[in-house]
Amino acid sequence: MTVTPLEIPDVLLFDCRVFGDSRGYFFESFRNDLFMPYLQTEFVQENESFSTKGVVRGLHFQRGDKAQGKLIRVISGEILDVAVDLRKGSPTYGRHVRIPLTSDKKQWAWIPRGFAHGFAVLSETATFCYKCDNYYAPEAEGGVLWNDPRIGIDWGVAEPLVSAKDAKNPALAELSDPGFRYSPR
Image 1 (cartoon, one colour):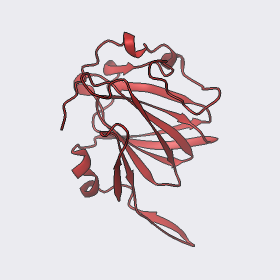
Image 2 (tube, helix red, strand yellow):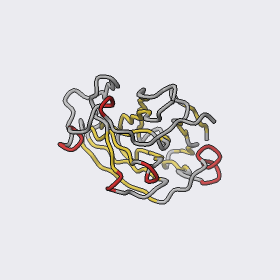
Image 3 (tube, one colour):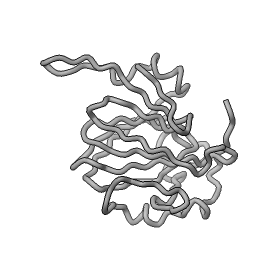
């Protein structure tokens, strides 16, 4: 497995080693001993999401002690995964990283606590799963407007399909403090 820090170094991309031949392939999709030196967390919940082409979901986060880190992998299809840094004091505050993920590449993307997360579906359909290091808590939900011009995300879709809830999220400048603070390693 190789691990690559992305443009925002706390966001990581994990490339799993795939063994393939004419019969198909095999890979260890998750091994605690390989991931934990980089993540230093414990996963408590795994979710699966299915969406159709053009769907944009996000940008979501959970506040305070309910914050979540997410380890994301595409099972089928192709998505553009996005993480926005919401950590006050971070040199990359308000910046985003775009991560193309496909089922063919067998990669994981790590979105740590302190980031808003979203994705766009680029293929006809996509199914992906994500491990969370904290339980879902609806009372702690927060969001940032998916098309905030200050963030400037190119979602890679011509006519995004966005939920009414996501369309009403505040822009970054109007976001009440979610309580995330940057602490250098």
